[in-house]
Length: 259
Image (cartoon, rainbow, N blue to C red; front, top):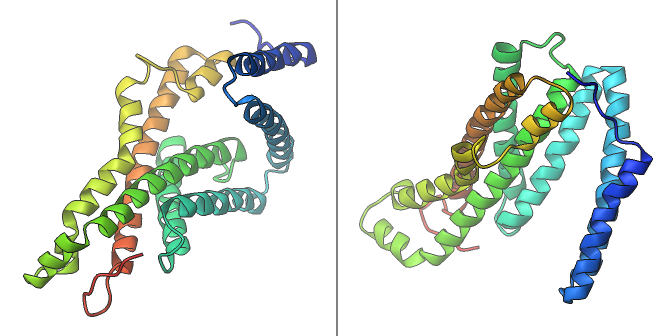
């Protein structure tokens, strides 16, 4: 196996040339994306350099409290982003979103840590932080899609729900089908990825490991693990979130609210 090819300043300069080419093509075609591409390029460079340096420090320190603090910050940011996509009007929506994402991520990390990877120590940052990042990113997307779908459906189906309530249905019975549809919507991106992984696409995990010199078979096994943990984490997140939102839409007297 050849040694890892490290990217030097010259190589990264040519890599940035790709974005300059993209900016030039955008200007030529008058797409109106020139400024967006430039800002996105600068932000990508700054954000990834900052993350790289910070992770170098965290990996060197190997302190459990620092590792948990990093994961906590990642969770807080993902929670706010997902909340903004779902709704800001629903009471307690921030803790509902955060709690659902934390539950899905924490359960999956604990299961993977204890039974699959069996890390020593359990807070090994080289594994725990990347896995947490992957899980939180996908849980955030699942929460945003499922929550947005559910809130929109409830607001647009008030007449149907109130009809069910007037006929004696409980709030949970009246929204059962809507809950199921929202949960399935949150899981669709993960399921679609699982259907074509390795055939149509090579995801970032397996590509990065192969580029770093890892055996393709070993990289494929790790990608299997990633896909499996994403499936359960996004499902737990979606179910918990939808249950929490559903309770906020009804009063103690089983009357439907609108947000």
